[in-house]
Image 1 (cartoon, one colour):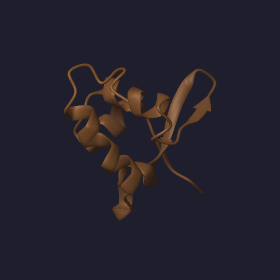
Image 2 (cartoon, rainbow, N blue to C red):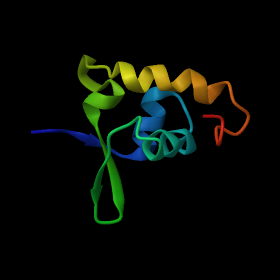
Image 3 (cartoon, helix red, strand yellow):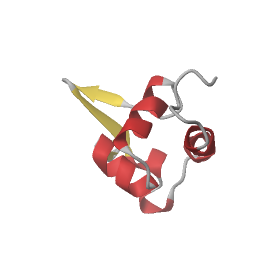
Length: 73
């Protein structure tokens, strides 16, 4: 069974803001499952239980280096 985390939990795990998590989701860099209006992220995508997603981690530096993170791609 797949475990999921909330946007807030994913932000704490990756040490970024929830806004950054939403940007990764909207850009397709972070997998997401919609449960009603709530968004849930597979725990394996954010490194929970020793499994890391190299795609997610590699997307973070480009967001941290920009001023707004919007429109720089």
